[in-house]
Image 1 (tube, rainbow, N blue to C red):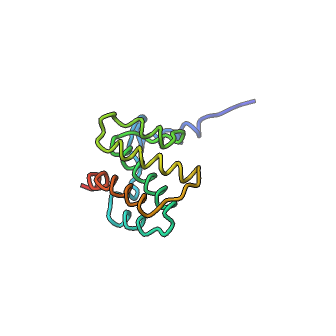
Image 2: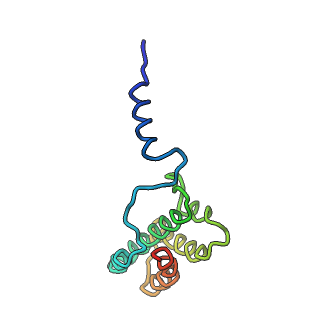
Image 3: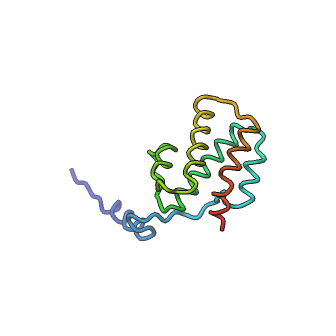
Amino acid sequence: MAVSFRRAADSARRVGATRPRGSTARAAGPSLATPDHIAAILAQPDRQRALILLAQRARADVVAAQGLLLQGSWTARDAVHRLPADHRHRDALTALVLAAEAVQFGDRPVSEGDFAVHVDAVKPLFQELSA
């Protein structure tokens, strides 16, 4: 039996040429740090879904801004715990992630007031990321 890895090696070489091994560079994609994206999430009539989306976008944006490569095996908590302990938005992000988990996995309701508290807490984070 003969096995050839030539084609796979050529493919890996091409992929490696576009993104060096160990690089944290990511393909450019939409960021919530723009007013349009914030408005889209705030306009969500389902506050449970809106809170989950807000947490996902905030986590992804802050992790990328810190130069971390978000791993598929990381939970939202894992991603937040990998931020520097003195990160100025870590507490707000932790509270948002925990609230989103309670909504997503515990089907907890989200009042308009609770949603507003989380939005106000992470607004400075998005303003900083968009600067």
